Amino acid sequence: MEVDKGKGEAEETRKVAEADRDTVTLKSSDGKLFEVSKEAAARLSTVLAGMIAGGSIDDNGTDLKQIGSEALENVVDYCNKHANSIPSAALISSSISFNTAPFKEPEEWERKFVDRLSHDALFDLVEAANFLGMERLLDVTCHKISEMMKGKSPDQIREVFNIKNDYTKEELEEIRQELAWAFYDD
Amino acid sequence: MDAADIVSKRIKGGCPLPEEMVQDILSRLPAKPLCLFRCVSRSFRAAISSRAFQDTHYQRSSGDRRRLFIRPPGVQEPFYACRLGGGGAPPAAAETIVSTRRLPQGSSIFPVSKSCRGLVLLKSTHCCTHYVWNPSTGEMSALPDKIPVRARLSWRFVPYGLCYCPATQRHKVVRMYDACGSNGYGVTPATICEVFTLRLQDSSVGKAGILFTAVAGRRCERDDDVDHDGASRCRRRRHTDEAADRLGYHHQAADDAGPGAGPSKFKLPSCYRFLDMSLNCVVLKSIKTSP
Image 1 (cartoon, rainbow over the protein chains, first blue to last red):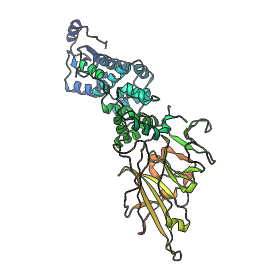
Image 2: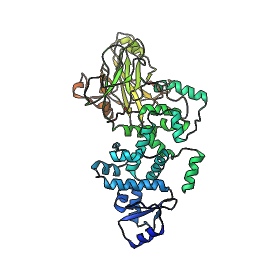
Image 3: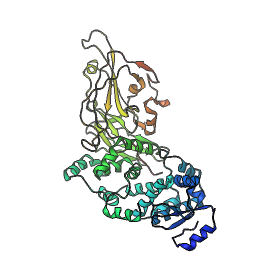
Image 4: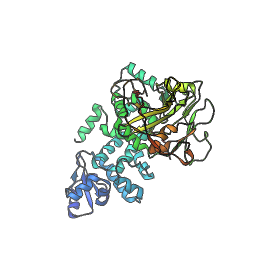
């Protein structure tokens, strides 16, 4: 379950020796290897569960070309932390059910887990969670971003999401007038 | 896509997340900041105004804590929302959701419907104007209707009801009244039911953020069964349980039963009349509270 930061061949040989383990090895887009428990991976990620069931797990590192090493490290970290925390009934049910179920508030450790991430790391993690079909991680990260957005001005939102303001000055003024109530607190 | 691509995507500019992820995140926000974020960019506004998004948002936020609307008696009192089950007397523990500043001046205004999928019907004593109000955002727009001439002749009270039609995904305003024959002598009372459709704003055209504009269009409702409760509920009421909206307007609490209540249905007489208003409306529901 130890995070392998791509230290290379020594690890590689160790892994081959321990064939048929209860962990899976994941390979990030930049070639770094990470290990995660098979049980946690299958439980938390629908995509990994499918790969494990379908036997398409590569002992030398399953290629996840869409995910950078930083994001993958966070994913693995999350899986490990999740495995260590006592899985409450709420968490298990929310990791199975989809979307329309009301969102369960993040638990303390989940909150801490996402709080320490930078914007970029958070965005990468959202994409990784989406790619791997990790419903709960997606929920927690998206929730964190939405919390972050609350109370921000449109300017700040544009900055965070790197969005160009494509309104003309006149249009913007018009919208601002129509939305006058949203610009002041009462 | 490898790491270099990801990095270059970020340097080149453009949103760091795919559009559907951004929408997912937005759908977790309460209604008020969402309305503000319509001025972030055209794509944000289009996303927030789309009906699919509003459906998702509605489903997401329907798990929220139940709220109670409180309207203290008095002419120019604001509306409050307070959490059910919470201690503390309103308005101390409550949040103001419509301040007196926004209420039309010089009239008393009160809700005549429960929250119906995010919207509440309000009535002002001034000229009997009705408003559709979104308590989540505070948006309020007057219905561009008039008291019908025939009802005015009979000096009857005209009850209004608000409902949501899941088939057409539209809010509708229903009003019913008895109209006597205009010659006054022959007692030929006819129950007239008028159905007004609130039309969702087309996100690609028109102005952003306006609840209603324009009066146009037509719509016929033939042989419709109209739930009498929908109209008869239009009585003065100061408390509206927002959580009841998912039950639609068939719901009636035990203490709520008035004359003519119950799920009695009747066929409309043949002398119905049709009106329609096309209204632009934004439906967002959530007065989200932190637990």
